[in-house]
Amino acid sequence: MPPRSHPTARQRRLGAELRKLREAAGLSTEQAAGVLATKRTVITSTEAGRHGISPERVRRLACNYECADPVLVEALARMSAERTKGWWEEFRGILPPTFLDIAELEWSAHGMRMSTMTHVPGPFQTEAFARALFGAAVPPLPTEEYEARVAHRVQRRRALDRPGAPTYTAIVHESALRIEVGGRGVLRKQLLHMVELSERENILVFVLPFSAGAFPGSGQAILYTEGEVPRLDTVQLDRTIEAEFLHLEGQLVKFRKQLDRMQELALSEEASRSLIASIIRNL
Image 1 (cartoon, rainbow, N blue to C red):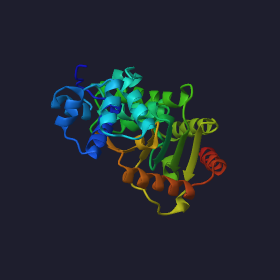
Image 2 (image 1 turned 90 degrees about the vertical axis):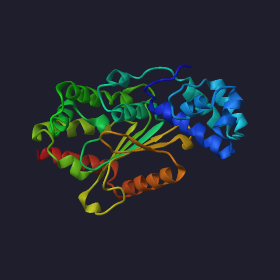
Image 3 (image 1 turned 180 degrees about the vertical axis):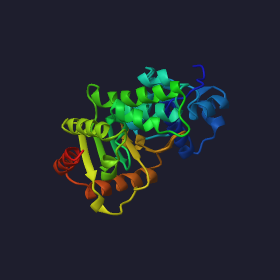
Image 4 (image 1 turned 90 degrees about the horizontal axis):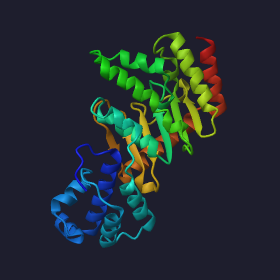
C-alpha cells in the first residue's frame, strides 16, 4: 500500500502496538522486514503510522513476534482493515491535528471517560458556547479557522448520537458550570442542554463540587478512551496544538485511578443534576 502523508490517530496507534510486539520479541526492524519479504523502511514507516498494512500481514507479524493473545491480534487486524474516512477528515489541513485525533478517538471508542475543569466537555458544547470560547482566542483566529473550529466542536456530538454509542462518563468541575462563557444567556442554554444529555442512558454526568477540595488531575482535562481490548485504551491530555497520546500500561493505570478518585469525590448523578438546575435558576 502507498504511504500516507497524514497518518491518523488509529494508524499511529496500530504502528505503536506493532512496534511494542516486535521489541518484546527481541527482533530488529531488519528481521521483521524479512518476515514480510519487504524493506526495513516499510517496517519503520508502518510502525510510525505512515504506511498502511493489511490484516493478513498484521497476523503474520504477530505470529512471528510470538504474540499469544489472539483477541489482541484480531483487534489489531480490524484496526488495519478500517479504511472509512471519518467526518473529521474534511477539517484536515485547516485545523490542528489534535482536533482531528480527538474526534477520531471519540468516534472509535468502546467507552469514554472525561474530566474537565474550566469548560463544558467538548461533545456537550452548544454552538453559541463554542463560538464564545474560540472567539476569546488571542490573537484572534482567522475567520476560516474560527468557523472550522466551531463546526468541528459541534460535530463531535455525533460520537454520542450514533447508533450503538458507548457509555460516556463526564466528570465536570463546578467551576466549569459557573464561568459565564458567552454571557449568562449562553451559559443557561448550555447547562440546560447538558441536563438533557445527562438523561440519556449512555451519558453519565458527575459534578465535582468546590467543596471536594484538592484532588488528583486538577490541573488538566483528561480524555480516557477504551479500546476494543484494555491494552488499546488511550489517554489524551488537553493540548492546543499537538496531541499527547499516552498508552503505556503504567500511564493507563495512573489515569484510571485519577478518574476513579475524581468520581468518588463527585456528587451522585441525581445530586449533580440538582446542582446544575440550581445554577440555571440563578442565571
